[in-house]
Length: 107
Length: 116
Image 1: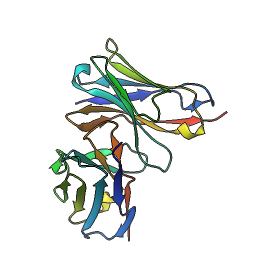
Image 2: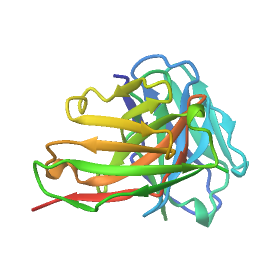
Image 3: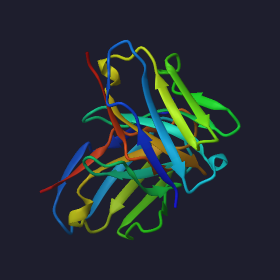
Image 4: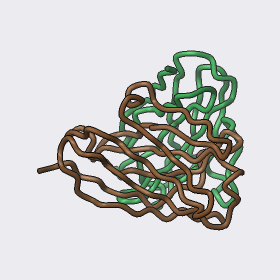
C-alpha cells in the first residue's frame, strides 16, 4: 500500500492568512493526487484532483502543486468558510489511501 | 447531476453483518467504479473497496476477508456487507463514485454503531 503522510496535523490561522499543507507519498504517484475538504458532520468535498486541477466551483484561492512524492495544498487568503479538515488522497493505485488529515483552526 | 442516497441500520450487534445500501440517480451505473469509504468517529478516511458494472471488485487487503460489495443494476443500487463486526467497525460509511481517478460524488454518510 502507498502511505500518505500529511503535515501539519493541525494549524491555527487567522482570516486572510496564507496556509500551506503538505502531503508526502511513500512511492512516486506521478500527479495522481487529490485534496478534499471536510466540515463537521459532512461528507468530504473534492477540491483538487490530478495534483493541481481545481474542481468546478472551488474558489481560486485554493491551489495544488507537486508530483511524484511531494505535494502541497495552498490557501492563499484564508476565509471563514475554509476552517475545516483537509485530506490528501492518492489515486495512483488500489488500495486508495488517504493522508491523516490537517485541521485548520481559527487562531 | 449525480446523487447518491444511502440507507441502512445505524446499529449492529457484535459478530453480526453490517449492511448499507446506496441508490444512484443521475448517472449510468456503467460510468463509475462504485466505492465504499469509512471514517471512524474523530478519525481519518479508509477506503473499503469498489465494484464495477463489469462485475469486477477490489477490496482493501485489511478488510477483504469480511467485505462484499454488490451491484443491482435494475435498481441502480450498490451495497456493502461487512461480516463479523466489532466495535472497531463503528464508523460513518460513505458510498462514493470513482471515475477518471476522482472520488466524486459522495453519499451523505451513514453512522453505523456496533454495540450490543
